[in-house]
Amino acid sequence: MKPQQDRNFDSLIKKFEQRIYDTRKGDWRLKLVKEDLDSFYRHEPLTVWDAGCGFAQISLWLAGQGHRLTLCDLSEKMLARAERQFAEAGLSAQFHHAAAQTLAPQLPQFDLVLFHAVLEWLADPMPSLQTIANQVKPGGSLSLLFYNRNAMIYTNALKGEWRWKHLLDDSYMGKGKNLTPPNPQYPHEVIEQLRQWGFTVTAHTGIRVFHDYLTRAVREQSDLDELFELEYRHCRMPTYREMGRYIHLVARRD
Image (cartoon, rainbow, N blue to C red; front, side, top):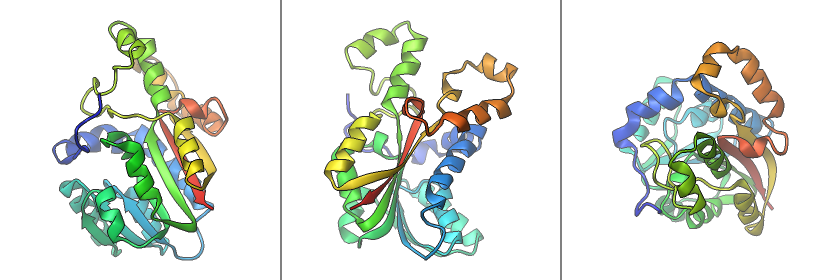
């Protein structure tokens, strides 16, 4: 069942900080996204819109390279945190407290649009994604990070018990915990939609292709450096990348 409205994370900001951002797995996500973007955007200054900025780690990194940032978020608290981090770094940007798809018609087109870990929380993911993607200039790129439905299905199939019934009748969406997105997406469907809208995928990375399938006991008894070396070796290979907890795509608008 889809949510009736987009998710606002004002009430969960501490959980996000502790369980997603201040973790080794969170650092790994940032590393891979930065790698996918670095080869494209290390030279001339670009106009960049971070559509649903959260704590704005990637925006802060891009602003530090001289790019011109516009940020928005539905969460007032997350946007305030982003503004504070820019101020502390001595960097400037435009900030808007608004949902990205609502703000989009008021904005110009950009060289680069970031849409990270937002799609899976929206009431209408694909129409909203199209609205965001329309703000990419011809020749510009969309950086899209989303929660992978392949991984959600596989993880819950391995856990078994009550979950199998909900997977079989396709009613699992929305039955997870507070930080489990209700609308994860299949990578092949997202890529096909982007193709139909005139985009060509230029980078495709799976984030945590092994990590999240391991039990805590296995992780505690194993060498995490070896695990992330294994992750790195496979994260951009077909098959393995499709099983990442998150999928990161960079798509150029033709």
